[in-house]
Length: 258
Image (cartoon, rainbow, N blue to C red; front, top):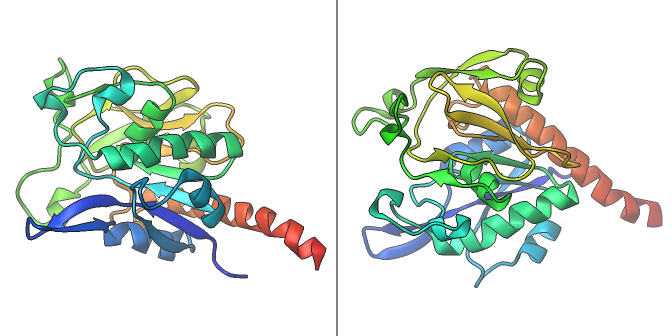
């Protein structure tokens, strides 16, 4: 059987400050291919090129990646400020309705960093523009200097809900992760369950309550060293299982017709 197809939601960039591209980090493709055992497919996240209806019929699962641009605050009813940073309105226009469609269809997705924030906003939640400005919160941003190994270094613990979804997936209630984000959840969206918290109370793991499929999202970056990291590997493995299950069920009617 062919590998399930995982659409990796890409970001818009300029190469050499002038050549526009749609791209996704190689770490995401590596994790999907090597750990989830699915075929990664970069999605140009722009409604001029793709539609939600086409995407859900083309891919078996979706990875909503991190990225420098943030979800525009208008998407959760707030006014843009300098603290909200850069934006990618084309990605907003694809990612948010796509997440809502996947939730209702039961089609699997995994959200990472910006993807975690997109899940919350898609379900009606709001975001803080800058976590480090909140009283009692640590600086969750990526260090500005150092090697990739130093930037993706594990920096804080996350505690999952006793007996919750992430506790079951990880086989542990407390895990150590990296931290490379500036924004975070303010008000959780409808049906969004906060299932894991950083040491300072920042939400780091969520899923959608009563959704028929895999809807896990994390605020850290598990794509880093996913094949070897004891926290990343089970997350991508379980996501791959969900994508294979969807692909098998999708193929069942055509197989019965042969």
